[in-house]
Amino acid sequence: MDASEARPADAFKVALEADQLVVEFGRILEPASSGGAAAVGVADRVVLPLEVARRLASRLGDCLRPFQSAIAAEEAKLLSPAQAALAARAGQEATRAPNNEAGERAAQLLRLVGDLGVPYQYERSFRICDHALMANRFLLTLDVADLGDSASARTLEIGDRLGMPGSARQIAEANLAMARSIHFGFEADDNAIICKLYLERCVEAPELQRARSEGAPVLLHLALKWDVTKGTAVTTRYHWRPALSLAEIEARLAHVYRDGPQTSLDLARAVLDLTKGRVAPEQLQYLEVEEAENDRRSFDLNLYNARLQVSDMQPLLHRMREHFNVRPGRVQALYDQIRDKALGHLAGGIHRNGQDFFNIYYGVVGLPYFNRQLR
Image 1 (cartoon, rainbow, N blue to C red):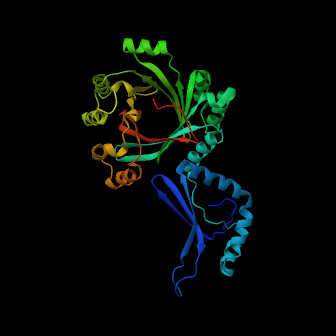
Image 2: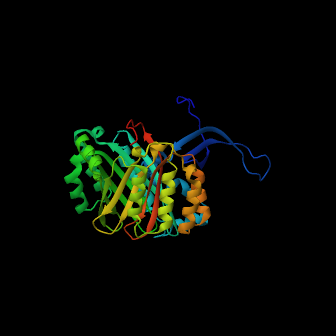
Image 3: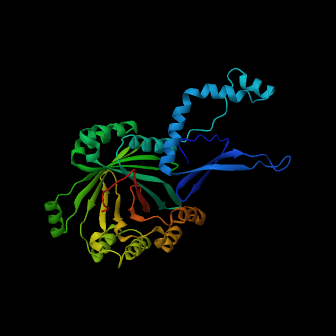
């Protein structure tokens, strides 16, 4: 499309294709016959990543808000006299759909990070657990160096805008100086809207070498997670066990599931088996996760270096669906959209609510660019 050429449009179509929003603009043509549907001549087609589309929708809403009265007045001109009289009655208000707070919060986080004006990574994920598939989850990753001298203040400002409780804010403020990278996370379901701030440490060579030689864990991520609707928060610690062999990773998985479901342990091992022959086990980043406020016991296994796709674990997704009693259609609809995405992380174990779960992360992308190599 020539940016210098204005093309009026009076019709558009929106569709979701492979995790991208596609918007087509065109002009309505004369119907072929009386009473027939009008045909549309498509002039332009715009393809947007979902996170960009969310930010655009949020900005459009902000731009239109000052003109809502004028727009309503123009719409009223199209009403019949009876409809106009009803709308003009004292106290009569148009029926509006309830606000989608989860969608608004997700768009807010994407907008706040985008407004920082620095490159970041965007990664989607979904959780599968008992009778549930939760796909409204994402993670945004930034380098602290890109934020300059005001990194701490800018990070805390986003936390404040997202309703971070004071106790969590104090922990974040006290530990931001150690962070090499910042991760903002979001997830929502019918019961909660969770925002997250991860502080990723820079593990220096002597500490890393000592951890490897002693077989000891090292703190990699300190995360603050809060429910914006309830005001509750937890502190999550992610301990990295570097350079484990395949047998050592399997032993750690068995430890996580030591009194948990054997089916989930078998599934986790099966995902690990997919990496054989693709990458040295020492290049897989294995973390274990704990929260002092509860009995959470879980793991996170970074699979990006194995160069797998989501489609490589299709049979295992089917087994997960059966294990957790999730409707087939829900999993299939999501799988059809993401099957060609890079398989990123597998997380699982016993969650803070005592529930068995798996999280699958996929398709990390850099926006507008992000040069850090995947670890």
